[in-house]
Length: 199
Image (cartoon, rainbow, N blue to C red; front, side):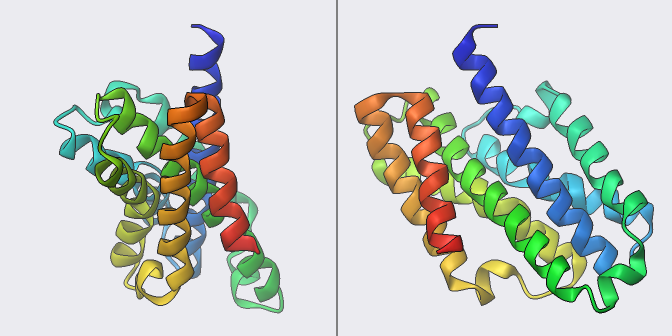
C-alpha cells in the first residue's frame, strides 16, 4: 500500500469512527438496545457512501472492504458500553450535545471530501455539479438515514448550516483537487466544512 492510499484510508476510518459514534449516541439517547445502537452506528458510518456507490454503479465499499463496517461496529459499541444511559438524560446534556456536534461535524467534513474524491476517481473530473452532489450525498446520507431510523427530525432539515457546510466543502474540494491533487483536496474540503460548522 503506497503512502497516499494509506493516508486516504486513515482519513476514511476517522470519518467512519466519528459518524458511528454520532449514530450510537442518537441510539442511546432514544433508549435503544445494543442491536439498535449498533445498527444506527453502522448505518450512519457507511450509509452515505453506500448510496454514492450505488449511484456510481459500483458495489458499495462497505461490502468490498468490511473494515469500514468492523470499525463502525467497534466505534458504536464503545459509547454503548462506556456511557451510562442516564448520562445522556441528566445534567450532562451540554457535554452530550458538544460531543455529538463534534463527531457529526468531523464525519460530515471527511465524508463530503471522500465523496468528491470517489467521484473524481470514477472519472467525473469535469462535472463540478456531479462531484459536489456526490460529496454532499456521502456527507449527509448516513446522518439522514440515522435520523429517519431513530424517528427524529432529520438534522439536515432542521440545521440549515449542515447542508450548506457540506455544499461549500464539496465545491472547495473539487477546486482544490483540480489544482493540488487528492490529499490536499481531502484536507481542504474537510477543513472548510469544519470551519463553517464550528465557526
